[in-house]
Length: 391
Ligand code: MG
Image 1: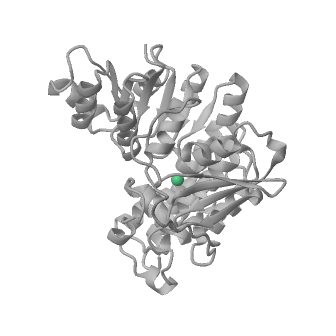
Image 2: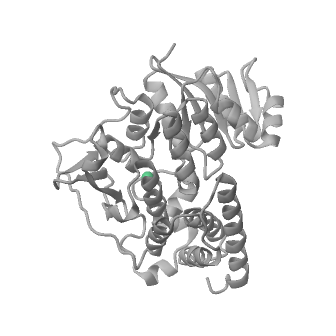
């Protein structure tokens, strides 16, 4: 049996694709035990055939019945569906690691189910911790089930922290590419189109996270995620702009020493580390070549031009349900922007309005957070329909 029997939730997205590249490189160590996608069953079937995957799931029920009728899956493949299907996969007896790479907060319940079933979680879906970090981390600590961060920045911090006691850590330093508009003026940003915001200089990712990178809301979400993952408050997490995306993040210790993790901007490095952890093996793509001149620029971020950064700090400092509201409002705002309903600068305006419109309270359980999430979505949507000509 392979060392890592992986359930890959979000197999057809960009993280899923890179995870499969890692699996292809290490067939002796990695077996794909189960895969799930939202609705793209043709692609899911191709993966099932290539990796002989016995259990698959489609979140979309219609896609699941189409998949069963399609004849594309190898005979004997069990095709699960819906949230129940994702949870079934996340708790499979035949797996010991769940790679969580579904979009948004859809993976929350499967992630909790995986932890309760004592499966190590390689976590890419940052929204899960933004929404419910307090409860997910408490569950992982209670049961002693590790969460290994798969997002490149958090994976870098995880590597830098290594076995250092937490009392020796002074600050975390998250790097940000600065996105497509890092040098744009506010005037230029006012006129940004969805097509422009969907281009990223260094990373090839899905549409939501690419727009979030352009607005730097992504770094805001990562700040909140880091706060929960490493139990360091937001005022001790710095954000720096590093356009080359080679230093993936850093840790500053109490003596002033700073450790950094470097690799080319390919997700395969962070994914392979989190999947094979605590072991290492040759990488999928070549690493940095120091026989060439390499420039590494670092500068402070501009909180004026990128209000999403400021709003994320406010949400993280406020805590309670505020991070959940930030996340939900941003998701609604990005969707409205992509449909040309609001401008690019309308995104932070919607987030700011919604943070002010939902009363801050301390969640007692996950249901409270899901209520806050729903309320934020309603408030953000109402604000967009009432004020879209001004946004
Ligand atoms: Mg990232």
